[in-house]
Length: 327
Image (cartoon, rainbow, N blue to C red):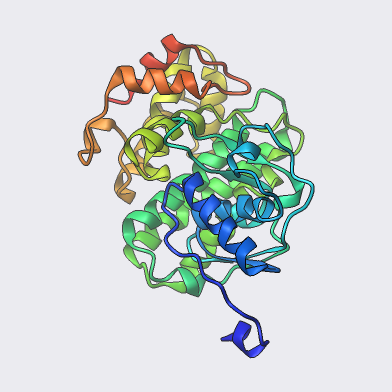
């Protein structure tokens, strides 16, 4: 109604998938070029906003948007992007990153560029009241996972650690309350604010940029089996932490000390798992009954995507071990 009142012509592209695909990006970009659009309004959650970011740099060119995603082309310009957030999870509304997958190439890379920052984002928690329980839970998991990706960066940044504890504590405190009262706009606002702060750069100052091994491994399951992003993270993170017990037990224990008040790595993993599970997000592949998974396919696609963490490297043997720990 506001756009119409401002005498704007509206050209709509609908139907972005929860795990967005490059085919939609290219189709929307072609529509934008056809109608000579001047601005993009992304109405949705992270999948819509991520897609809109790549659309914004693809409309001005004639080549496939995938060329940007795999680094074959660099953008020279972008249409201005306005985000209207309807699902609190990814923090895409306040950063310059996007994730889009290509099922044909069996790849799901992330992409970042200063040109794809939204020019403005509207964050009204009332717009998230209709988000169902499962997607609400996945969003809470996602914001915690983003915080942990920052925390497990190898570089020392104690003040940023304190920011991590604060953001995660918002999720630990208000996430369970929200799951019992999905129409509470105050609680929706608290989770929305936390999700934005989890990936707007606040937690990453003084670091190398975060680890991202868990996210990268989780993307394999979204790519192969269309599992919601947040659900992959609640399955991978406990497994990844168990794998890391022999490498960084003190760092894991420090997390538990500051979140739950005890200095015990194994108990920290148990507490995190016990937080994810009651939200309704799966903590093992055995709980995800919608699709059967295949160990070798996961290892193969992880290899194609060169899955690894920035601070904690992974090998093909590690892919198999992680998969086994997710059972």
